[in-house]
Amino acid sequence: MNYNPFSLAGKMVFVTGASSGIGRQTAIECSKLGAKVIITARNEERLQETYNNLQGDGHSMVLADLTTSEGLDNIVSVVSELDGIVLCAGRAMTSPFQFNTREKYDDVFNVNFFSPVELLRLLVKKKKIAKGGSVVFVSSVGGVLGFTLGNSIYGASKAAINSTMKFCARELAPKKIRVNSVNPGMVNTPLIKGGTISAEQHQADMERYPLKRYGEPEDIAHGIVYLLSDASSWVTGHSLVIDGGITI
Ligand SMILES: NC(=O)c1ccc[n+]([C@@H]2O[C@H](COP(=O)([O-])OP(=O)(O)OC[C@H]3O[C@@H](n4cnc5c(N)ncnc54)[C@H](OP(=O)(O)O)[C@@H]3O)[C@@H](O)[C@H]2O)c1
Image (tube, rainbow, N blue to C red; front, side, top):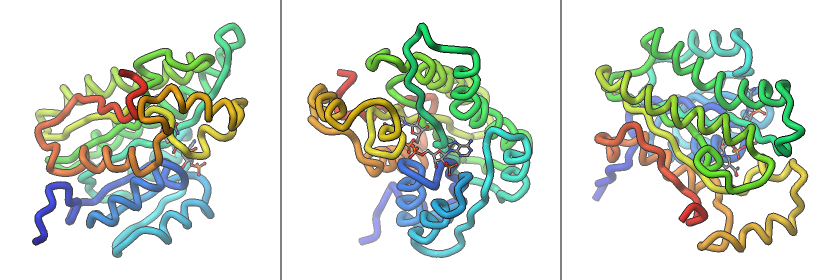
Protein backbone atom coordinates (compact mmCIF):
# COMPACT_ATOMS: atom_id res chain seq x y z
CA MET A 1 0.00 0.00 0.00
CA ASN A 2 1.53 3.33 -1.12
CA TYR A 3 -0.86 5.74 0.62
CA ASN A 4 1.13 8.70 1.94
CA PRO A 5 -0.51 12.15 2.31
CA PHE A 6 2.91 13.61 3.13
CA SER A 7 4.46 12.50 -0.17
CA LEU A 8 6.43 15.14 -2.05
CA ALA A 9 6.62 13.11 -5.26
CA GLY A 10 6.62 15.32 -8.34
CA LYS A 11 7.39 18.48 -6.37
CA MET A 12 10.39 20.77 -6.89
CA VAL A 13 11.56 22.02 -3.49
CA PHE A 14 14.16 24.74 -2.90
CA VAL A 15 15.97 24.84 0.48
CA THR A 16 18.25 27.62 1.78
CA GLY A 17 20.73 26.96 4.58
CA ALA A 18 21.09 23.44 3.24
CA SER A 19 24.78 22.99 4.08
CA SER A 20 24.08 22.34 7.77
CA GLY A 21 21.63 21.51 10.54
CA ILE A 22 17.91 21.90 9.92
CA GLY A 23 18.23 22.93 6.26
CA ARG A 24 20.43 19.94 5.45
CA GLN A 25 18.06 17.48 7.12
CA THR A 26 15.05 19.10 5.48
CA ALA A 27 16.61 18.71 2.03
CA ILE A 28 17.39 15.04 2.75
CA GLU A 29 13.88 14.30 4.08
CA CYS A 30 12.29 16.02 1.08
CA SER A 31 14.36 13.88 -1.29
CA LYS A 32 13.37 10.73 0.63
CA LEU A 33 9.72 11.69 0.14
CA GLY A 34 10.16 11.99 -3.61
CA ALA A 35 10.88 15.69 -4.18
CA LYS A 36 13.48 17.01 -6.55
CA VAL A 37 15.53 19.37 -4.42
CA ILE A 38 17.52 22.51 -5.17
CA ILE A 39 19.86 23.34 -2.29
CA THR A 40 21.81 26.50 -1.54
CA ALA A 41 24.37 27.85 0.94
CA ARG A 42 27.82 29.49 0.79
CA ASN A 43 30.13 26.64 1.83
CA GLU A 44 30.72 24.38 -1.17
CA GLU A 45 32.20 21.42 0.70
CA ARG A 46 29.37 21.21 3.23
CA LEU A 47 26.72 21.79 0.58
CA GLN A 48 28.24 19.01 -1.54
CA GLU A 49 28.04 16.74 1.52
CA THR A 50 24.30 17.42 1.72
CA TYR A 51 23.96 16.85 -2.02
CA ASN A 52 25.71 13.49 -1.71
CA ASN A 53 23.11 12.43 0.87
CA LEU A 54 20.06 13.27 -1.24
CA GLN A 55 18.06 10.28 -2.42
CA GLY A 56 16.83 9.87 -5.98
CA ASP A 57 17.91 12.03 -8.88
CA GLY A 58 17.20 15.37 -10.54
CA HIS A 59 18.61 17.45 -7.65
CA SER A 60 20.87 20.48 -8.02
CA MET A 61 22.88 22.89 -5.92
CA VAL A 62 23.70 26.57 -6.19
CA LEU A 63 26.28 28.45 -4.14
CA ALA A 64 25.11 31.87 -2.99
CA ASP A 65 25.55 34.41 -0.22
CA LEU A 66 21.97 35.40 0.51
CA THR A 67 23.03 38.77 1.91
CA THR A 68 24.19 39.92 -1.54
CA SER A 69 21.98 40.99 -4.43
CA GLU A 70 24.22 38.95 -6.78
CA GLY A 71 23.51 35.85 -4.71
CA LEU A 72 19.76 36.41 -4.76
CA ASP A 73 19.69 37.27 -8.48
CA ASN A 74 21.71 34.16 -9.27
CA ILE A 75 19.27 31.93 -7.40
CA VAL A 76 16.22 33.50 -9.02
CA SER A 77 17.74 33.10 -12.49
CA VAL A 78 18.72 29.43 -12.11
CA VAL A 79 15.71 27.93 -10.32
CA SER A 80 12.85 26.48 -12.31
CA GLU A 81 9.22 26.73 -11.18
CA LEU A 82 9.09 25.79 -7.49
CA ASP A 83 6.41 23.90 -5.59
CA GLY A 84 8.10 24.31 -2.22
CA ILE A 85 10.41 26.93 -0.75
CA VAL A 86 12.11 26.48 2.61
CA LEU A 87 13.76 29.67 3.86
CA CYS A 88 16.03 28.17 6.49
CA ALA A 89 19.38 30.02 6.34
CA GLY A 90 19.97 31.94 9.53
CA ARG A 91 22.42 32.88 12.22
CA ALA A 92 22.39 33.32 15.97
CA MET A 93 23.83 36.07 18.13
CA THR A 94 23.88 36.30 21.90
CA SER A 95 24.31 39.86 23.11
CA PRO A 96 23.01 41.41 26.34
CA PHE A 97 20.65 44.26 25.47
CA GLN A 98 22.95 47.00 26.77
CA PHE A 99 25.69 45.84 24.37
CA ASN A 100 23.48 45.69 21.29
CA THR A 101 24.79 47.92 18.51
CA ARG A 102 23.27 48.93 15.20
CA GLU A 103 25.99 46.86 13.51
CA LYS A 104 24.87 43.74 15.39
CA TYR A 105 21.24 44.38 14.43
CA ASP A 106 22.29 44.79 10.79
CA ASP A 107 24.36 41.58 10.81
CA VAL A 108 21.54 39.45 12.18
CA PHE A 109 18.67 41.10 10.31
CA ASN A 110 20.56 40.86 6.99
CA VAL A 111 20.69 37.06 7.21
CA ASN A 112 17.55 36.26 9.21
CA PHE A 113 15.09 38.81 7.87
CA PHE A 114 16.10 40.82 4.78
CA SER A 115 17.58 37.86 2.84
CA PRO A 116 14.60 35.47 3.01
CA VAL A 117 12.06 38.23 2.56
CA GLU A 118 13.81 39.74 -0.46
CA LEU A 119 14.39 36.29 -1.96
CA LEU A 120 10.70 35.45 -1.63
CA ARG A 121 9.72 38.82 -3.11
CA LEU A 122 11.93 38.20 -6.16
CA LEU A 123 10.63 34.66 -6.63
CA VAL A 124 7.04 35.93 -6.54
CA LYS A 125 7.80 38.84 -8.88
CA LYS A 126 9.54 36.55 -11.40
CA LYS A 127 6.64 34.08 -11.19
CA LYS A 128 8.90 31.26 -10.02
CA ILE A 129 6.36 29.75 -7.60
CA ALA A 130 3.84 27.25 -8.93
CA LYS A 131 0.11 27.54 -8.28
CA GLY A 132 -0.48 25.42 -5.18
CA GLY A 133 3.05 26.18 -3.97
CA SER A 134 4.06 26.24 -0.31
CA VAL A 135 6.54 28.60 1.37
CA VAL A 136 7.98 27.76 4.79
CA PHE A 137 9.97 30.30 6.81
CA VAL A 138 12.16 28.80 9.52
CA SER A 139 11.55 31.12 12.46
CA SER A 140 12.00 30.39 16.18
CA VAL A 141 10.13 30.34 19.48
CA GLY A 142 12.55 33.20 20.22
CA GLY A 143 10.36 35.27 17.89
CA VAL A 144 7.36 34.68 20.12
CA LEU A 145 8.73 34.62 23.68
CA GLY A 146 11.73 36.15 25.45
CA PHE A 147 12.60 32.79 26.97
CA THR A 148 16.39 33.01 26.79
CA LEU A 149 18.59 35.90 27.92
CA GLY A 150 20.70 37.89 25.46
CA ASN A 151 18.65 37.01 22.42
CA SER A 152 16.76 40.24 21.80
CA ILE A 153 18.29 40.89 18.36
CA TYR A 154 17.77 37.31 17.20
CA GLY A 155 14.24 37.26 18.64
CA ALA A 156 13.35 40.52 16.94
CA SER A 157 14.55 39.19 13.57
CA LYS A 158 12.35 36.10 13.99
CA ALA A 159 9.35 38.12 15.23
CA ALA A 160 9.67 40.19 12.05
CA ILE A 161 9.61 36.95 10.04
CA ASN A 162 6.49 35.71 11.83
CA SER A 163 4.70 38.97 11.07
CA THR A 164 5.81 39.10 7.42
CA MET A 165 4.75 35.46 6.99
CA LYS A 166 1.16 36.36 7.90
CA PHE A 167 0.99 39.31 5.49
CA CYS A 168 2.51 37.18 2.71
CA ALA A 169 -0.04 34.44 3.43
CA ARG A 170 -2.89 36.94 2.95
CA GLU A 171 -1.41 38.52 -0.16
CA LEU A 172 -0.33 35.32 -1.92
CA ALA A 173 -3.48 33.32 -1.19
CA PRO A 174 -5.18 34.59 -4.40
CA LYS A 175 -2.26 33.03 -6.32
CA LYS A 176 -2.94 29.77 -4.42
CA ILE A 177 0.45 30.02 -2.72
CA ARG A 178 0.49 29.07 0.99
CA VAL A 179 2.92 30.71 3.43
CA ASN A 180 3.67 29.34 6.91
CA SER A 181 6.53 29.16 9.40
CA VAL A 182 7.97 26.66 11.82
CA ASN A 183 9.02 27.94 15.26
CA PRO A 184 11.57 25.53 16.73
CA GLY A 185 12.84 25.49 20.30
CA MET A 186 16.52 24.64 20.79
CA VAL A 187 17.76 22.13 18.22
CA ASN A 188 21.08 20.26 18.22
CA THR A 189 22.89 21.91 15.30
CA PRO A 190 26.16 23.83 14.89
CA LEU A 191 24.15 27.06 15.42
CA ILE A 192 23.81 26.49 19.17
CA LYS A 193 27.34 25.17 19.62
CA GLY A 194 29.44 28.13 18.51
CA GLY A 195 28.33 30.64 21.19
CA THR A 196 29.26 31.43 24.74
CA ILE A 197 26.98 28.83 26.36
CA SER A 198 28.81 25.77 27.70
CA ALA A 199 27.74 22.14 27.24
CA GLU A 200 26.88 22.02 30.98
CA GLN A 201 24.63 25.08 30.63
CA HIS A 202 22.90 23.47 27.65
CA GLN A 203 22.39 20.30 29.70
CA ALA A 204 20.81 22.31 32.52
CA ASP A 205 18.65 24.19 29.99
CA MET A 206 17.37 20.91 28.56
CA GLU A 207 15.90 20.09 31.96
CA ARG A 208 13.49 23.02 31.51
CA TYR A 209 11.96 21.22 28.50
CA PRO A 210 8.94 19.07 29.42
CA LEU A 211 10.24 16.38 27.03
CA LYS A 212 13.72 16.71 28.63
CA ARG A 213 15.73 17.08 25.46
CA TYR A 214 16.58 19.54 22.72
CA GLY A 215 15.20 18.87 19.26
CA GLU A 216 17.03 17.05 16.49
CA PRO A 217 17.05 18.44 12.93
CA GLU A 218 14.63 15.62 11.91
CA ASP A 219 12.03 16.91 14.40
CA ILE A 220 11.89 20.21 12.56
CA ALA A 221 12.31 18.75 9.07
CA HIS A 222 9.22 16.59 9.58
CA GLY A 223 7.13 19.66 10.45
CA ILE A 224 8.45 21.42 7.36
CA VAL A 225 7.59 18.38 5.23
CA TYR A 226 4.00 18.55 6.53
CA LEU A 227 3.75 22.21 5.53
CA LEU A 228 5.21 21.48 2.07
CA SER A 229 2.96 18.50 1.44
CA ASP A 230 -0.63 18.42 0.25
CA ALA A 231 -1.56 17.16 3.75
CA SER A 232 -1.51 20.83 4.80
CA SER A 233 -3.28 22.21 1.73
CA TRP A 234 -5.79 24.16 3.90
CA VAL A 235 -3.12 25.60 6.20
CA THR A 236 -1.73 29.08 5.59
CA GLY A 237 -0.54 31.94 7.80
CA HIS A 238 0.31 29.48 10.58
CA SER A 239 3.35 29.33 12.89
CA LEU A 240 3.94 25.69 13.75
CA VAL A 241 5.65 25.48 17.14
CA ILE A 242 7.99 22.46 17.45
CA ASP A 243 9.67 22.83 20.81
CA GLY A 244 9.47 19.81 23.12
CA GLY A 245 6.86 21.72 25.12
CA ILE A 246 9.11 24.58 26.30
CA THR A 247 6.51 27.23 25.48
CA ILE A 248 3.65 25.48 27.31
N1 LIG B 1 19.35 25.32 16.10
C1 LIG B 1 18.39 25.92 16.83
O1 LIG B 1 18.33 25.77 18.06
C2 LIG B 1 17.33 26.75 16.15
C3 LIG B 1 16.19 27.08 16.90
C4 LIG B 1 15.20 27.87 16.31
C5 LIG B 1 15.37 28.29 15.01
N2 LIG B 1 16.49 27.96 14.31
C6 LIG B 1 16.62 28.49 12.94
O2 LIG B 1 16.78 27.41 12.06
C7 LIG B 1 17.51 27.86 10.91
C8 LIG B 1 18.64 26.88 10.63
O3 LIG B 1 19.48 26.87 11.76
P1 LIG B 1 20.47 25.66 12.10
O4 LIG B 1 20.34 25.44 13.54
O5 LIG B 1 20.26 24.56 11.15
O6 LIG B 1 21.87 26.42 11.84
P2 LIG B 1 23.23 25.97 11.15
O7 LIG B 1 23.46 24.54 11.30
O8 LIG B 1 24.24 26.94 11.66
O9 LIG B 1 22.94 26.30 9.60
C9 LIG B 1 22.80 27.61 9.16
C10 LIG B 1 22.70 27.58 7.65
O10 LIG B 1 22.50 28.93 7.17
C11 LIG B 1 23.40 29.14 6.10
N3 LIG B 1 23.74 30.56 5.99
C12 LIG B 1 24.10 31.39 7.00
N4 LIG B 1 24.38 32.60 6.52
C13 LIG B 1 24.18 32.55 5.19
C14 LIG B 1 24.33 33.49 4.13
N5 LIG B 1 24.73 34.75 4.35
N6 LIG B 1 24.04 33.10 2.87
C15 LIG B 1 23.65 31.83 2.62
N7 LIG B 1 23.50 30.90 3.57
C16 LIG B 1 23.77 31.25 4.85
C17 LIG B 1 24.62 28.29 6.44
O11 LIG B 1 25.33 27.95 5.27
P3 LIG B 1 26.81 28.44 4.86
O12 LIG B 1 27.56 28.77 6.11
O13 LIG B 1 27.36 27.30 4.07
O14 LIG B 1 26.52 29.63 4.01
C18 LIG B 1 23.94 27.04 6.99
O15 LIG B 1 23.59 26.16 5.95
C19 LIG B 1 17.98 29.28 11.23
O16 LIG B 1 17.13 30.21 10.59
C20 LIG B 1 17.82 29.37 12.73
O17 LIG B 1 17.61 30.69 13.17
C21 LIG B 1 17.48 27.20 14.85
